[in-house]
Image (cartoon, rainbow, N blue to C red; front, side, top):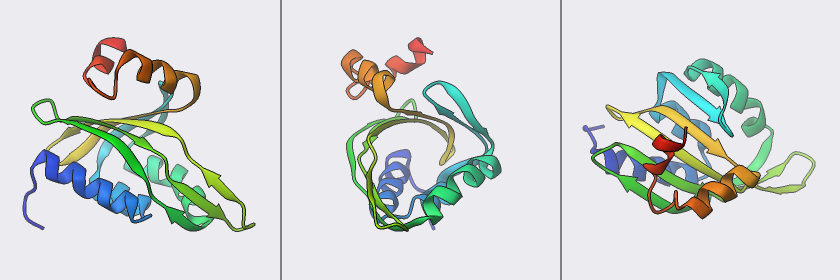
Length: 141
Protein backbone atom coordinates (compact mmCIF):
# COMPACT_ATOMS: atom_id res chain seq x y z
CA UNK A 1 0.00 0.00 0.00
CA UNK A 2 1.44 3.41 -0.92
CA UNK A 3 2.22 5.94 1.78
CA UNK A 4 -1.01 7.58 2.83
CA UNK A 5 -1.48 11.06 4.22
CA UNK A 6 -2.72 11.34 7.79
CA UNK A 7 -6.27 12.10 6.63
CA UNK A 8 -6.21 9.19 4.18
CA UNK A 9 -5.03 6.83 6.94
CA UNK A 10 -7.75 7.96 9.34
CA UNK A 11 -10.41 7.66 6.65
CA UNK A 12 -9.19 4.17 5.73
CA UNK A 13 -9.35 3.17 9.40
CA UNK A 14 -12.94 4.44 9.54
CA UNK A 15 -13.83 2.45 6.40
CA UNK A 16 -12.44 -0.73 7.98
CA UNK A 17 -14.30 -0.06 11.25
CA UNK A 18 -17.54 0.59 9.38
CA UNK A 19 -17.04 -2.70 7.53
CA UNK A 20 -17.25 -4.39 10.95
CA UNK A 21 -13.55 -5.30 11.13
CA UNK A 22 -12.17 -3.63 14.27
CA UNK A 23 -9.26 -6.06 14.72
CA UNK A 24 -8.18 -5.52 11.11
CA UNK A 25 -8.19 -1.75 11.73
CA UNK A 26 -6.26 -2.26 14.96
CA UNK A 27 -3.62 -4.46 13.33
CA UNK A 28 -3.20 -2.07 10.41
CA UNK A 29 -2.92 1.19 12.35
CA UNK A 30 -2.05 0.70 16.03
CA UNK A 31 1.63 1.29 16.81
CA UNK A 32 3.55 -1.60 18.36
CA UNK A 33 4.36 0.59 21.39
CA UNK A 34 1.08 2.56 21.42
CA UNK A 35 -0.88 3.14 24.62
CA UNK A 36 -4.64 2.72 25.08
CA UNK A 37 -6.74 4.41 27.75
CA UNK A 38 -10.31 3.79 28.87
CA UNK A 39 -11.84 6.83 30.57
CA UNK A 40 -8.31 8.10 31.31
CA UNK A 41 -7.10 4.88 32.97
CA UNK A 42 -4.47 2.84 31.15
CA UNK A 43 -6.15 -0.06 29.36
CA UNK A 44 -3.14 -1.48 27.51
CA UNK A 45 0.51 -0.74 26.84
CA UNK A 46 1.54 -1.90 23.41
CA UNK A 47 -0.28 -3.49 20.50
CA UNK A 48 0.11 -7.04 21.79
CA UNK A 49 -1.61 -6.32 25.10
CA UNK A 50 -4.26 -4.12 23.43
CA UNK A 51 -5.17 -6.74 20.86
CA UNK A 52 -5.15 -9.46 23.49
CA UNK A 53 -7.72 -7.58 25.56
CA UNK A 54 -9.98 -6.77 22.61
CA UNK A 55 -9.84 -10.03 20.67
CA UNK A 56 -12.05 -12.13 22.99
CA UNK A 57 -14.88 -9.57 22.78
CA UNK A 58 -14.62 -9.12 19.02
CA UNK A 59 -14.29 -12.85 18.39
CA UNK A 60 -17.43 -13.57 20.42
CA UNK A 61 -19.54 -11.42 18.08
CA UNK A 62 -21.43 -13.24 15.35
CA UNK A 63 -21.84 -9.97 13.43
CA UNK A 64 -20.63 -6.39 13.76
CA UNK A 65 -22.31 -3.36 12.21
CA UNK A 66 -19.83 -0.51 12.17
CA UNK A 67 -21.04 3.07 12.53
CA UNK A 68 -18.58 5.92 12.98
CA UNK A 69 -19.92 9.48 13.28
CA UNK A 70 -18.66 12.98 14.05
CA UNK A 71 -15.20 12.38 12.59
CA UNK A 72 -12.91 15.37 13.05
CA UNK A 73 -9.32 15.38 11.82
CA UNK A 74 -6.59 17.88 12.74
CA UNK A 75 -4.07 17.22 9.98
CA UNK A 76 -1.18 19.32 11.33
CA UNK A 77 -1.37 17.84 14.83
CA UNK A 78 -2.13 14.28 13.66
CA UNK A 79 -5.10 14.08 16.03
CA UNK A 80 -8.57 12.79 15.29
CA UNK A 81 -11.75 12.16 17.23
CA UNK A 82 -14.93 10.29 16.40
CA UNK A 83 -17.99 8.66 17.91
CA UNK A 84 -18.25 4.89 17.72
CA UNK A 85 -21.91 3.91 17.53
CA UNK A 86 -21.30 0.41 16.20
CA UNK A 87 -23.40 -2.54 17.29
CA UNK A 88 -22.77 -6.25 17.45
CA UNK A 89 -24.65 -9.47 17.94
CA UNK A 90 -23.29 -11.87 20.55
CA UNK A 91 -23.33 -15.65 20.25
CA UNK A 92 -26.51 -15.74 22.37
CA UNK A 93 -28.26 -13.67 19.68
CA UNK A 94 -28.46 -10.56 21.84
CA UNK A 95 -27.69 -7.26 20.09
CA UNK A 96 -25.41 -4.77 21.90
CA UNK A 97 -25.08 -1.07 21.12
CA UNK A 98 -21.76 0.74 21.58
CA UNK A 99 -21.71 4.46 22.34
CA UNK A 100 -18.20 5.73 22.78
CA UNK A 101 -15.88 8.57 21.93
CA UNK A 102 -12.49 7.72 20.47
CA UNK A 103 -9.62 10.25 20.49
CA UNK A 104 -6.39 9.29 18.72
CA UNK A 105 -2.91 10.72 18.41
CA UNK A 106 -1.00 9.45 15.37
CA UNK A 107 2.63 9.55 14.29
CA UNK A 108 4.01 8.25 11.00
CA UNK A 109 0.77 6.54 9.95
CA UNK A 110 0.28 4.74 13.28
CA UNK A 111 -1.86 5.38 16.35
CA UNK A 112 0.49 6.06 19.23
CA UNK A 113 -2.18 6.99 21.78
CA UNK A 114 -5.86 6.11 21.85
CA UNK A 115 -8.27 7.36 24.47
CA UNK A 116 -11.72 5.81 24.60
CA UNK A 117 -14.49 7.41 26.61
CA UNK A 118 -18.03 6.45 27.47
CA UNK A 119 -20.64 7.42 30.04
CA UNK A 120 -20.42 10.68 31.93
CA UNK A 121 -16.78 11.35 30.97
CA UNK A 122 -17.72 11.13 27.28
CA UNK A 123 -20.69 13.44 27.80
CA UNK A 124 -18.52 15.95 29.64
CA UNK A 125 -15.95 16.03 26.83
CA UNK A 126 -18.69 16.44 24.20
CA UNK A 127 -20.20 19.31 26.20
CA UNK A 128 -16.74 20.89 26.37
CA UNK A 129 -16.55 20.75 22.56
CA UNK A 130 -14.11 17.92 21.84
CA UNK A 131 -15.97 16.91 18.67
CA UNK A 132 -15.23 20.34 17.20
CA UNK A 133 -11.81 20.86 18.76
CA UNK A 134 -10.09 17.53 19.49
CA UNK A 135 -6.96 19.40 20.57
CA UNK A 136 -8.71 20.54 23.79
CA UNK A 137 -8.02 17.10 25.22
CA UNK A 138 -4.29 17.84 25.27
CA UNK A 139 -4.93 20.56 27.85
CA UNK A 140 -7.42 18.47 29.82
CA UNK A 141 -5.21 15.44 30.52
